[in-house]
Image 1: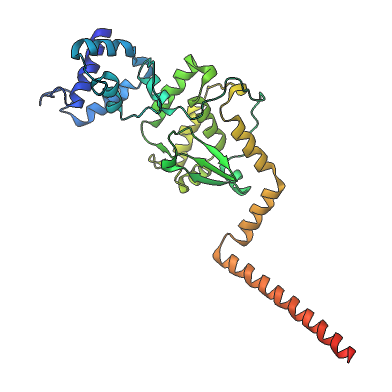
Image 2 (image 1 turned 45 degrees about the vertical axis):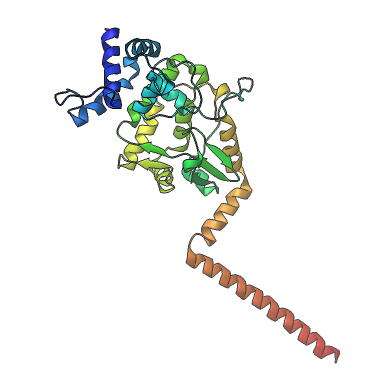
Length: 304
């Protein structure tokens, strides 16, 4: 059965790559929607085949003469992934996807968190405290590269579409079963769960183009993110974003940031509010000048 499945995968890759021609009666490539379903099934954790078996079988069949003809290269092209670093050992396709998401830098194995993660503020609450949200865009090389700098939480764009829940659920399941103490995807999903509690939280991130919601409904999209973290445990002492959470919590608890945010919201949240504030300040300055001028005039009159 493993040999049959391996041959099927290799043949699919070769036809998709153009090295083997797909006939008009091909049961997969003659039906546009069916290849997408096959790709979806390839990403399921329960359908994984050891990568070394696929690679050895491909080498035996095709005898590639250069790295550009290797099974790895063909796999990267098929799934449209670009590994950020050299991958010495790929266990299977799900392991490949996870590796492509790994952030830089990786966690320091010698550094441990303080244990319990205390993070209470959501997106809307952080925004009210003065935190600004910014989509990193092309400046980030990984979805997991999130940073907080000078009051700005910089987050790479995350696309919510029909297959997002299934795809990330498989990555979470893989880490939960095999990489629990070195999890990155789980920690990322946990951080999203911390930040997003209501549809309004999600809509704020959509407005900032941090989340692209192709599901349409904000409540449904928020539920998808919440569902990914259900029945999932994290290692608090090794949480990848523990320092980030501490920075956000410290900023959120600062009275100075809260008062500044309230001032900006009340007096600078609308163009007319800005005009009114500036006008009031000008009137105040003119009144002070007029009062000083009057005092000086009275003083001079009394002297002479």
